[in-house]
Figure 1 (cartoon, rainbow, N blue to C red):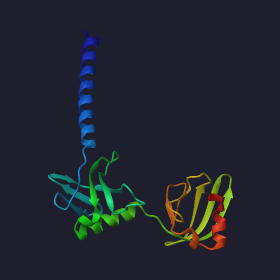
Figure 2 (figure 1 turned 120 degrees about the horizontal axis):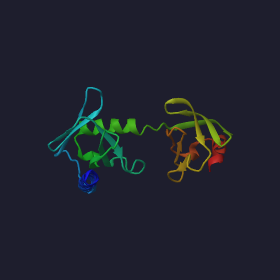
Figure 3 (figure 1 turned 135 degrees about the vertical axis):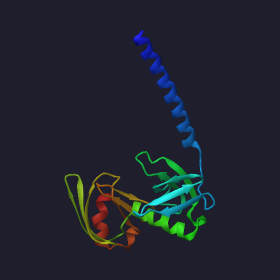
Figure 4 (figure 1 turned 120 degrees about the vertical axis):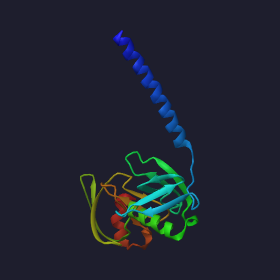
Amino acid sequence: MEQENMGMDLLNLQEFDEEALKKESEELLEMRFLTKENARFSRTDGGFVALRFGEKEYARVGVYLTFPLTEPEEYISIREADEKAKEIGIIEKLSQLDKDQQDMLREQIKLRYFMPIITKVLDIKDEYGYAYWNVTTSFGACRFTTRMSGDAVIFLGESRMMVTDIDGNRYEIPDFYQLSVTERKKLDLFI
């Protein structure tokens, strides 16, 4: 008898979970656009961004680019700031928001997608499957390490490159051909 009750409880739990999962799936599939008419962003005391969307308030939100390299001002995903980062909605074009709202979101984007520009390649040493970089960036001198695998340095266009170190930090070389011949030679390891 007791085993039968446990089986019924488990069955009821499965049904409940299925319904919750179905509802959550429907919410995830629903495309919601955030506009200046239905969404208002504000800065929290801690410097984060909060959102009022319709009747719902979010004490803190995350700002993500869906096309960070090709369309950094369009289709911006606004997500809850917890570990699930569930999407609240999409801003179709940043320019459609009020200027103060645009500035606030651009600041958050800069923080999330911080990518110094490599202005000079001083040295790259290859040892044991890793490359040890010594460069000058738009933020000063920098040393970092990359794997020698094919995904550490990728071309984003004909001459634009992105370098990703072992910690996931990204660096940009806007124009490979603007580097000196000596600097380009050092990058031969990755081309």
